[in-house]
Image 1 (cartoon, rainbow, N blue to C red):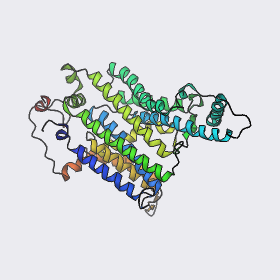
Image 2 (tube, rainbow, N blue to C red):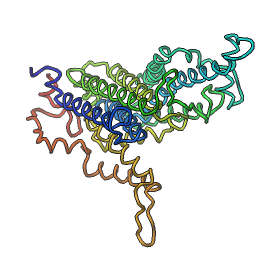
Image 3 (cartoon, rainbow, N blue to C red):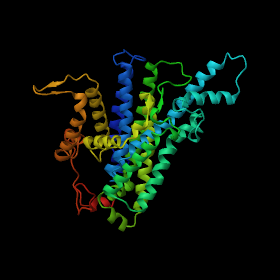
Length: 409
């Protein structure tokens, strides 16, 4: 029993139970299936928050456990949104065009329908031709595959080039940020084939589904909760056992792990690619709830926010990443919604819509200086979690690094 997955990861069952209770409670309070105590817009906010929790788990896995501070994971998140958004926009436009041409004196040819769809989608950028990147847009399953393939392939290529060159530390962080900025700037161009600055819109409407937003919002909440639960279990499985020990060893002392004969680059590439795929899936569930996506969503600042969420929640704790993302997301929604009354200081009035980012930055600094374990560290105190009796010298210079006794497991 001691070596079972659940025994090594007791937080998994607790997390899944809390997630299930939360999902059921929101469903029973929704307009579609319950009392109507929660508005549809707030149900969407909660669904989007679950998606942000999933991408935070990916960030914690790559940074908190493997030691790679990636400032580009929100680019993978946005790529997943673009991939599913292309199908949503194509299918919805196809229905509109088909209905408008249904009563035409002469039935339109298939090519005429495609041209009409292209004019509707790309007319805003002065074009009517489908770019090559839309080749699979007519098929839901092919675009769903692109949700995984697009971020996964980009991460695989980028990671292989970076890790084989043994780029580490702040230099790797700068490279991931440069990749994100370059991709964002490219997508801002109309020639990118993704409508430039206009992005993809109307994603909240599911083509061919006769249901209102009340029901659709709950469906996406269910999908987001399922993805978060599976993502948490997968991440917990990855960081457990020997593989997890090697990954944490790379974080603490990469040179020593390489000296022991492990393929450090292979481990890092696997984690980097896997987390990019997780981020893409989270984005594919997030943007249909948001209703729109544009290149601004993958600006480098978004990935920096993601790192802040994980740090505030508690780096190196999967539940800490979830807590940090949920806490910051919901508090941010509250402060930026205009519902918080301004703070009158006499000589100056603090408008929280403008000052929220300052408050977030100050919170990040305070957590880093005085509570490096983040909010997740409070869970240890509340549950009276006892630190195991650890023997042997540290494998790495950081506090909490693996020690000799643990390395033999």
